[in-house]
Image 1 (cartoon, rainbow over the protein chains, first blue to last red):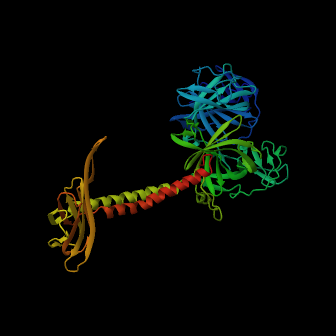
Image 2 (spheres, rainbow over the protein chains, first blue to last red; image 1 turned 90 degrees about the vertical axis):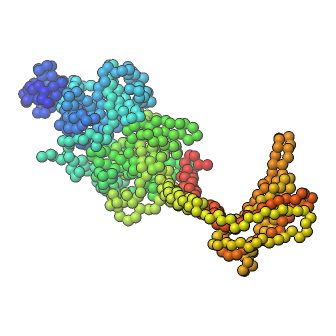
Image 3 (cartoon, chains in turn cyan, green; image 1 turned 45 degrees about the vertical axis):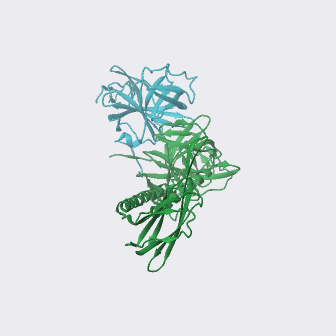
Length: 212
Length: 422
């Protein structure tokens, strides 16, 4: 799949969107965050180098989730007091997008559910143990994380820039169902998916590590 | 051409200056110096000592940090080690945990308590409460797990790398649920509950996977999720029993069908009270093959009894088999209605009588006041006896019953270590 092309407003390097619905990308040449308004590109700032990372996944990694092929086109790196994780932006073969979260090599694939079938609890009301019904299953909030992003890379479906610390509530079910309440927006966003094993994803085009 | 990324990094311990290596790099949230056991923040290792070594006894891991092996079909490296303990009835019980790392598949753990090993992974599905009676049950992936033990686990000593901010002195509430060889465990703090699943693993498997030197120490006692060796043995001995019992049943059927049951004597007599010396002998009869002999006494007694002393006597050798039989039969009526008691016939089976010519010596005895009583005596040879088969079944039952008892004792010893000991 090939999306629209253009030139970086900052350094004039060619910018090629791999995904037709991408809203934002990072210029690989000058590391400017480039936002697309139709075909005009705006450079809205420059990001610092990505923090060093030990994830086996990288831009261009391909895999399958429930028999649907996907390609990794972007990423947000989050950091919190006790560590951090990656949200890899996936584009499926049918053009829809999803997220592969990689927290210390524990993986989950999820997609945005908009609007949520039930309103999400307010940020002030969400605590560990709070339930949320999802397709006959009772999901439970198992972790609350306050995190800030420390880097972006590649193409994203929205403008992600300069956000402050955000509250995330992770939920789990009895069938490996995984959900996140994302309080970066009001009303909060709901992502639902599944915790998966590395081997379930048939990943290719991975990083290789010295000695492994 | 794919470039490889570094995964390891070395620095000097900010506490003691010794070389420290990070093997899981960005995944590591805390690393304990292998030299001084100080716990260091890997994000800025030259500055942040999270905790200096506690003044505790140093523990040497059986599997040295840095050991590589193939576990569950995948390469992995031992990157961290901790000793943890719980307190039960004022006694501390310690066990060891090893952190295994694979850059693609992440972390898993091995634990050892007194020679008992478990292979532990975090779980993706939340277990479901099944029943909360005397012994809580939870279900996970369709299998039922019974509560075993709840405790507070304390981290006493750490070495190497951990994917969380480990500290000595950390305490979590734990609950273990078992379905041997599996064990589901929860660890809870005020903020979070995490679940993991352990599979009981033979030490030899680990020694082989990590090419360890020497022999693992032998396991003592029965561990929570140790599979019972008697389950398998019980199944095997029950199968052997079923097979032999089936064969035996076949023999019984063949015997019941093919037995001669040859009648060699059938006589009618009458007991007359006060008729003087009552003893007499029968005409001789032949037992043409050695085997069982059945002697049956029948008498039409009514509210009376008749006893007979019998001797089966070999004509040639004079060898005698003495038996006594008595029949009695009473009827009447009381507040509950009519009743009867006793039986009008009685038989005895002699198990092994040689072939030959025989006769019976008969000495009847009855009440002196009753009317005369007609009675019959019948002798049959080769009448099947079920007794030897019954004894054989009992003997065959010994191994499965012994295994059942051993299994019960094993389960008893298992529960001794739990919150549910009798």
